[in-house]
Image 1 (tube, rainbow, N blue to C red):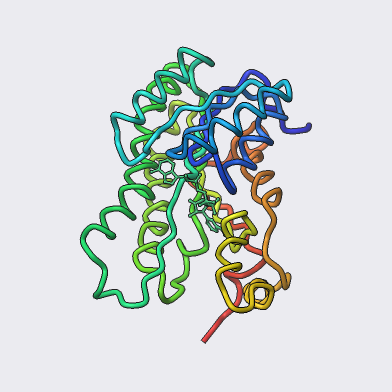
Image 2: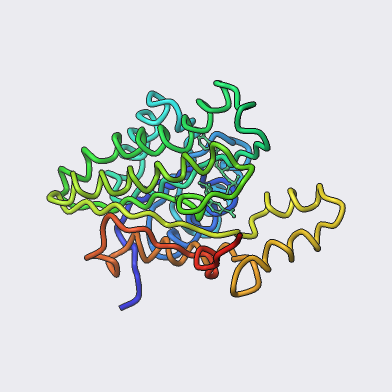
Length: 259
Ligand SMILES: NC(=O)c1ccc[n+]([C@@H]2O[C@H](COP(=O)([O-])OP(=O)(O)OC[C@H]3O[C@@H](n4cnc5c(N)ncnc54)[C@H](O)[C@@H]3O)[C@@H](O)[C@H]2O)c1
């Protein structure tokens, strides 16, 4: 049975770029109506224009997921323009590089948690009442391999991604009786447009890209499709008996012991 999102209304946060963009596109192809919710209006509007020009049904709502007011407005706009949300992909997140933990400002700490953790909770809190009423729903939280292992120099990113696995399990346990499933999708290094921009800022972009790939037993970084399809699996009917789980899609990276 091919995964099919016909009649599903999906919200994808951070859907204007990178992984969220790939997920939004695949969900549209699978028949879902999609709300792309992102702070970046320029990219979000251009992307949604392209989706609709290709015959899909999508809207863009400029949203800052760290603000519960902004999220409530986005979810209400989705319900009135597309229908009651049945799928939420909590994808938007910000990565943080920080060589010295003790230099972390209170502002940086709050901003990391504001987007990566509060943002997921704000969106979940706003869609769950619709899902409870329908006694059906699927939430996919995009975590990371940083939610399982500590990579030095990324504080407090890794702390926020550990929190994602806790939030996932807690929501799964509390809302399972309403047939609302909550799972986490945890990628390894994925080659997004922003990853290429980051490599371009280095002395040896191709060398850096390859060196990161070498950390994975599959000897390469992952592609956008290699995350979008697992997201489709978790969001759709083919994972109907899965909840509270972490699906790690990392080319084997978390299986390696690095000293
Ligand atoms: N790319 C990777 O290698 C990788 C690996 C593991 C996990 N992840 C996780 O995947 C998710 C997506 O990562 P990506 O690499 O595609 O990121 P990206 O930076 O390419 O895209 C993130 C999107 O989120 C949006 N965004 C940022 N703050 C927001 C806010 N407050 N409200 C709404 N939208 C906001 C940005 O505008 C952007 O469009 C993140 O949660 C990230 O932690 C990425």
